[in-house]
Length: 397
Image 1 (cartoon, one colour):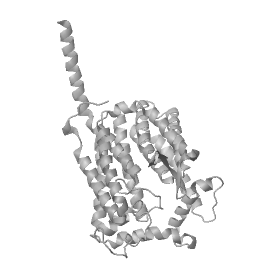
Image 2 (tube, rainbow, N blue to C red):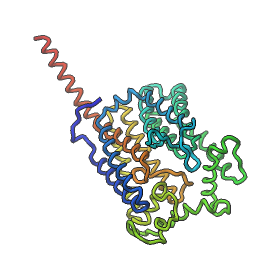
Image 3 (tube, rainbow, N blue to C red):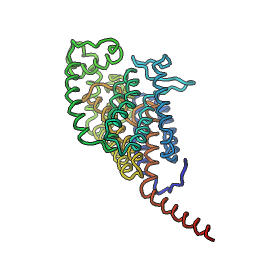
Image 4 (cartoon, one colour):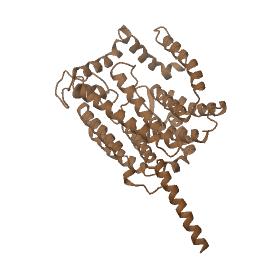
């Protein structure tokens, strides 16, 4: 489970980037909603500890329990649907166990990355066969349907994107990819055209599951419509807040009541719309700094993945990198009005302990993959050879 690692192989640059972006997050949350700042700070500290602990555990050992983790993930998601989940804003996404509240879907993201990293490595030789592809899709659909019916469309899309990225990196044939795109892209365009029509009605029971998600899409598609005006205000105010910061921003904890932050013009300002706070108080420079740091974190994940000792390590590192990249893209796109409101957190910046710990867990696995790169594997092989030679000589004596 534990191996002897050399300190010089630890990716301290990635750790510094994570501490920096998390510190910015704590400062922004303190400015947006001071009552949450201390909890976020505790979350960052405990998350860093959790990350370091996981980074010292051999990920290859954890992969042995991939099926157990997969089943556990399904159990947690099923429990949400059996009356034990707590409802908030029309969605049942929270579990409360012994006073500890968390979102199983957030943890599911990392569990599925671990599971499919092992699954795809085992099926490296027959990945492009119909049997393996449909088996992988079937294993994905089980948790995906449970997530979608919470309802949680944004995490359904996020998990799907990460899965597709891992399939591609594992060596999925371009012929298969082209065939899938030729079918899926036209279907998505047709579906988008249909659901943006105001007279389109969902059949039961889909209406309760994803109806309000369609309202968000319609609001984004036609914000000027009278029935959508109230829903469009939040995104419009977010855009205004970001623009009002101009180059350098108004400064953290400013007292201007006309700001989107202090004037309470944007809901969930400490969570889903934390980027609006960054734009208003840190300005264009601050927003660029956040995007740059998140981009560097993703780049480090990719670099570690390219040097991994095996396919599973590569898929874990690149899978976590894809998760950070796509979720950052979603959050910032919503805050700037490029996409409909999804309720997605900005990694390491938004308030939310489950999301924060989940990302730190993912980074712990990435760091462990980095500790066991190809050079590490080569050195171990040399040591094993020397040990075999020594034991052979001792036996002859």
